[in-house]
Amino acid sequence: MNKKITVIKGDGIGPEIVTQAQKVLDTVAKKYDHTFEYTDILMGGCSIDACGVPLTDEAVATAKAADAVLLGAIGGNTSTSPWYKLAPNLRPEAGLLKIRKELGLFANLRPAVLFDQLRNACPLNDEIIGEGFDMMIMRELTGGLYFGARETKVVDGLETAVDTLTYNEKEIERIAKRGFDIAMKRRKKVTSVDKANVLDSSRLWRKIVNKVAENYPEVELEHMLVDNCAMQLVKDPGQFDVILTENMFGDILSDEAAMVTGSIGMLASASLNDTKFGLYEPSHGSAPDIAGQDKANPIATILSAAMMLRYSFDMDAEADAVEAAVKKVLEEGYRTVDIMSDGMTCVGCEKMGDLICERI
Image (cartoon, rainbow, N blue to C red; front, side):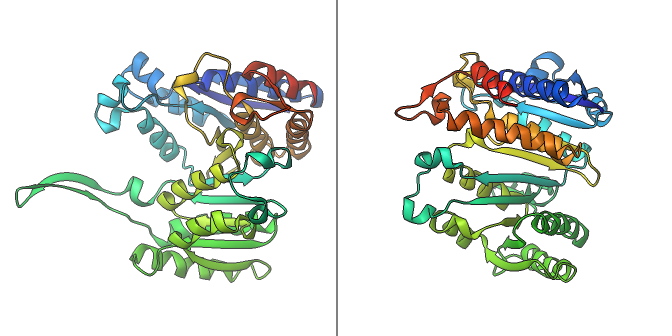
């Protein structure tokens, strides 16, 4: 099978971790008789330096012509990088918002899994961890506060900022359907997270989610206020299967869930539109402080590539092989510096990629 992949290496450690993910994909292609064609585009700070904007229209067109997009990380140090002296619409993260909107990537899937081999890295105690946890956070990605109207103006002599949170029923319905569809393939439970005791947008969210749930009688639905969900993630993470929520809540909760696992460097993500097309990226940032030092953990990006195989290419066996290879390497005691513990063998970014390829 031949697939076209647009590659965005990005900034910081992005080029290092994407290179390892491509190496894994090439190993899969050779073993399973596939062909993956890569086309590189710029996004983020590197695009600002080369083109003056964080994402060009030409780059967007290239991404749209592919079967999927593989992204590393974008951005730099917000306090020292000249990129963050630019207007907000010209900063690295504006490129990410633009590509999500242009590609219609409304559904963000972020798994938060506690690997048995990394149980000691989890900041929670054994009593709370129990038998472990495996949840999927389904975040709406192209609506809400991040995409609403905004302005800063002077009101009664005071500088005043306004950000608008807007959702319509169609936006809520389509993300809810994706959440329930994913739950049907997992443990058949959806926790819909909102702030319906305060926000009109959340009351509409709850109404539409309840309506969608009627078409999924096998799935258990519960509603949870966002502040309670934040507490429950550190009190009893094992209770969650699929967490369904809006853009800003999902942004915050998915990072909390990532850190509960012990290392955000282990967690993949996928952003999907209403077809098989998706953008795949690690959940972590660009880590400019370790860029170019072979210290980065490539596993999240490699697992993101596995999600690409599964969700965009319908290559379940290949995805299983990559995930199994990652677990095998961890079982053998290999660790990058961010997940290193006593008695383990510390390896660099490139070596970790090599080890995973050898076990596919």
